[in-house]
Length: 322
Image 1 (cartoon, rainbow, N blue to C red):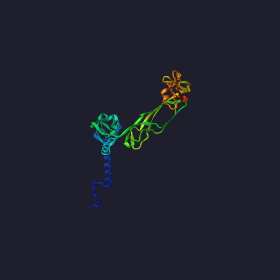
Image 2: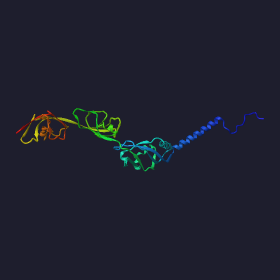
Image 3: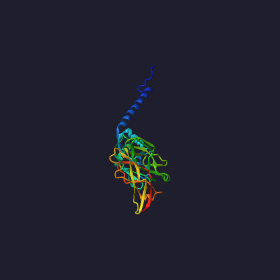
Image 4: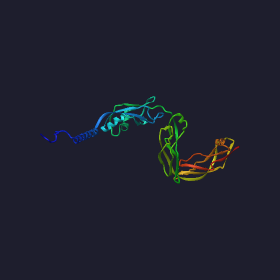
């Protein structure tokens, strides 16, 4: 008759069972990671809402389109794409040149153009083999809009003997404002954010943000600018003032008969700016003047002259009859 412990045969005690389960879980995890690290080819569908700057249209499409393609990528990325297809659609920034008008509010993009947006739709690591979707259609409803000029808000300062030539050029010089009509009625221009250009001694280029306007959107959030800055030299001279287009049997006497002109010329000066140049008062200007006070005008402005100032600026003219 035995008095020892009962024989358990090949059974597991509690500790062995835990080790066995952990081993199974570990093996499964390794297998899962290995499997998901492999590349697979599968049809993937992603819902898309388009955004674009179409003239006179809303910025965002009012409908959702589904892009279906055969993709080759890792299992991890396929799982991500499948989850993404069950969530809200992605917003795809589409160039207006890639959208073709079908009629009414409908615009479409072809599969050949969609190739440029593969990474935006399916991710950087997805290898797209072919599109199943031939074209995508989006509805961009008409929206009230108007074109208004861009007004720079800036402070410009040049070094000594340098000046701005031609003014500050904005590119584009106008933008489209979209919104409800009662908002548009109160907008006749848009402004840039304030910026400073100081100590200039040569041409400059840059870009600047536009100020936001509540209740509307703009066709562009930033604009480029360029400014031509040149070195100049001043040339001062005295020039006669003539009367022109005076009717027969009438005379027009100008006081004083000469003006002192200060020219700002491109450096170095290649020729005298006053050569073949003179100032005049047109009789029609005199006839339309108040009290016979007129501003003389040059017959021409030499190419190398950036600007000029005259002294005095206003002359007194007296009409006589012969």
